[in-house]
Every structure is written in structure tokens, then in C-alpha cells.
Image 1 (cartoon, rainbow, N blue to C red):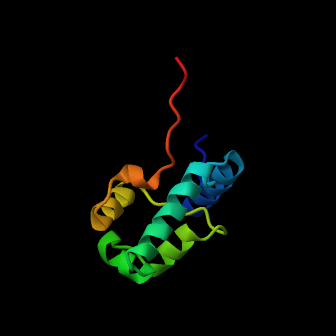
Image 2 (image 1 turned 45 degrees about the horizontal axis):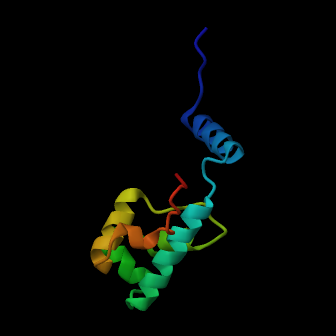
Length: 102
């Protein structure tokens, strides 16, 4: 017997699965990067709307990324685009790494 499942039920299942497995949760690193980008965005005089022009996304998307109430995050490609626009290194968005003791 072949299991018949609607597209909607499948998407609902995936959403529930990801929520319970933590796949959508923002990690501490995600939060650090998002906060650093927000700080630099303000320092450079970019509004959320200004960010949408080079990221080709909606203002709502930027708002969700910057909000702690949503699990929306920037993609690696978007972080690259932001670094290009801000004329900085991608590393400027990340916390410093601590070298391991030999």
C-alpha cells in the first residue's frame, strides 16, 4: 500500500519535526551575528528598508531576523552580501575565537 499524504500535511509534519528537534532555533552564535549586524546597520545609517535593497527581501524578513520572537536567520549568502555592502569582513560579525591550549 502506498501512503498518500497531502502537501499541506507533509509541510505541517516537517514544521512540527523541526520545532521539536530544534532545527529552527537561533543558537547563541546566530544571536550574536544578528545583533552585531543590527549594530553595524545602525552605525552605517542603514534602515531595515535599506537592507532590503541589496538583500532582495522584504522589510518583514529583516524584522523577523532581528526579533527574538522569530527563528528567522540570515543565510550565509546574505551575510556575505551584508559584509560587501558594509565594506567589512564577514569575520567582523562573529565573536572572537579562543585558540585551544597546546
